[in-house]
Image (cartoon, rainbow, N blue to C red; front, side, top):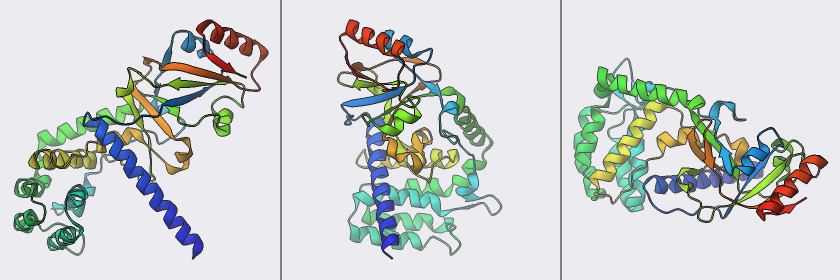
Length: 329
């Protein structure tokens, strides 16, 4: 029993941490200020690009398909998660998206009433009674006064027809194609909050034969491209779901006159989510075009691995002395 409770508590902590990270990303996508780490770290081997990157002050955005997580940026196009293709019935997932949005903006008592109203339009097998949706929207209005619910509910009821519309279907497939190509077109540079972390010295600095750069993010001009990573085993890779949920968020944002912040993260989560086995990494990502060289932050210090060759040590120490950079061996 103790083990089960401990696991449940760990799972709850991870979910809470995930939501905090998603909230940070959402604020950033809304153009709001977020708090960045003061320093981030990059562990590297002494390969053919090592000194070129340091001397020319850039970071390389690696194609997603070449990263260590084989499922990185993979997407799917499964519209049946939203509605039943055979019966043309809407599924509960769309309504669940609305509930997630409005929960923080109504009292706990009222939210229980909202769930009660919603339960009346859901069949036992999880389908939505579309002919009841509009009636439900008027009841919901009482408990969530900041949102004009009727147009939103009406739009939801028409999702199956919209997804079957040839033009809309074609546009979704185009977006899917772009997301599918992201594995080779999306460039990612991974940085970590962790200083002097042994696992990184082993994995990314070739058993301490490489080096670690400590970057100072103060006044860094490319923070707009920097995002925290979400660690979740339930990766949001279904592009159809993400498009619809993003649209729901934008509609609620508009219908509440900006009172309820739209969740603009579903599409971005496809490129910022890793399996929980990587959660120890505390990763932040610079995103851009694959193979792009992006201006690096100011270097505060460079740490040389204890197994680095004499030649690489001497060359890096000379570089740091010339640039007035702290170096530690």
